[in-house]
Length: 350
Image 1: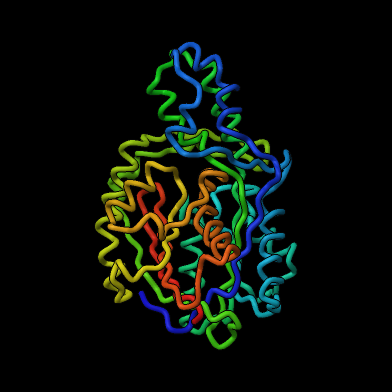
Image 2: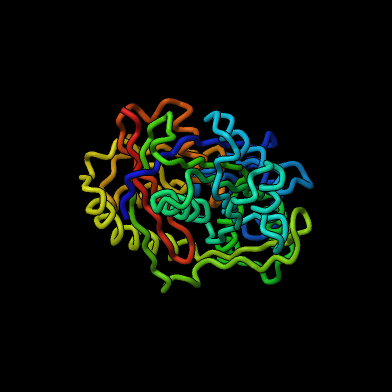
């Protein structure tokens, strides 16, 4: 897919103040570590995640999403009445219904002629939202759209710790399957996309590729949720080794097609921003695709895996730090359990 008329006008993010270190999680798992005779420090050593953030208890995703979306509009000085679509794409949500996007729409006071809905696709919800809004702009259906989401990890982490501490029987394999849940972090991100003629920034979304390998659908399963906010009792089992291998293999299939679609060579990519899982995934992905580590920017070390927010959060921080230089070619590469892939190319203003 190629776009001629779509620009990324603003990237905004919010992160909580409360920090939870991997060291503290291991202290809470002391009974597990003692029973399995494990050395402290393995969680950070294996994943590269030093800490992650937690929202205050009682925080609802739509509450933060609305504030982050408002940040994006304010950052671009863009009139809310021109927003033609609002998509909420995080795994975390307030309720099964109504859509969290409806709650955000109400808080922002967006126009009635605004398409409002949620997208749920594991860690790709916001990226899928970007594709959806970009398609609508390219077709001339809307002039601008907002994609936003807020991930909240407190309940998943606390429930995982509690389940492991009371598990009978307990094994290293059980801990391994739960480790991914202990790397999850909380954050919020919003992307404002506009028609090229309305853009002041001039960062063009060139297009990209979507790819699926649903043979790997059973490698990561979260339990259903039946309530929102702090009433949720989520749990997730992940076959991390096989999920990593399947994800890398799918990325190897997809990446050459992505380059061909945009007419890029791998050495022409100035910056890569990938889904933020951990150091093992990053190393394997960059090596498999022939990408240079010094041109890759990461945030997982201090925010953990923030789900569907991870990639736009990382892109927003990269923009904020001046890592996206004039004219830069930026590859946004999202991989989510399922397995699904979205790869998008961004051309920074010259």
